[in-house]
Picture 1 (cartoon, rainbow, N blue to C red):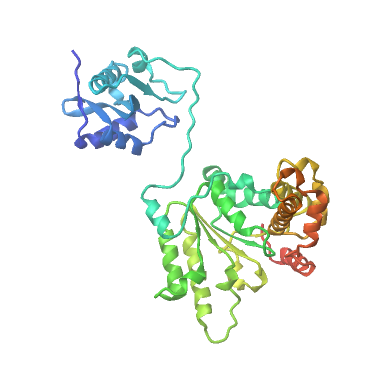
Picture 2: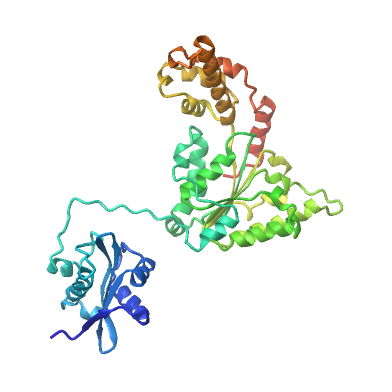
Length: 429
């Protein structure tokens, strides 16, 4: 006769159930289901426990979906392994579920799991040709409302890969800010402190905002853009509102926080009588060290005019890296042009010629010129025949070159010269 009895799970069993689950785990093996998912299954699914002399020595829990039951936990206390307890728990679970009309039972186990005898003894079939895929978004349910109040959001997963060209900048950002944050434990074991804050600087339109969003996408962290101009009407004043926003952000487990055109609130102080703007700069200088104390978040500030920033703002201890984002080079311009040319005509377009002709063009300039050529081609097609027939389109290399001639580059030669000087004097990578 079995020394234990199997009964339904009661909420009072939870602490003992967690203890049994922890004892049953194989060291070094990542469980398929988290403790949170197991507790949820006990509350909303079907769960049983094996009890001996008032003590829980084993437990099983299932989630029911349609006509299938998924086993999310089968656990035994250390002293009760290999004694038939697992099979008894499975049998008790099946009795309860078959009475509900469930006929299909499934379980996922790590490939290195050794305690599978209970499933084999209960005539579970091993499916050898299946692959298990898993993806976890680092956003807790309780954070969703808070994130929404802050105007933040989770960005699409592939933004980083979608960045066309800019390989030099991508490589630098991938290795400096992203890698230590994505591989935190490895970084710490090698003495690398994951960064907490960076500055992106460069001419207008070179993609600093796009890079900030792509970093959040790459890390799969929520993206929150702070707009100082929207905080000016707050009853606390801009400095107080800014402080409150960062306090609210501090309650999130992960976040990429972005401030564009940061020179508006961190410009060089004059030393004259304190102005409201200087008070905001002082507040921001206090906020950043406090922000840096917690892991799991990254502050990215962007500026077109890094020379105008207060010297104290950029010093070591506030920002880990000051990274230049310049106009795209020849290879990057080629990749960006290819992104905006319709695939059906791309083989007939001389991309090299377009890239050479668009020197000093920012990604935004290239997009504008490409869309301008497409719009002119549409108008030409309609005006030529009265009908928008694709056969009469005028999208040729010459048409794109003409659009380039009619587009003023955002980045002037003077801006490029100043940018090169700023890299030598201010950049920190």
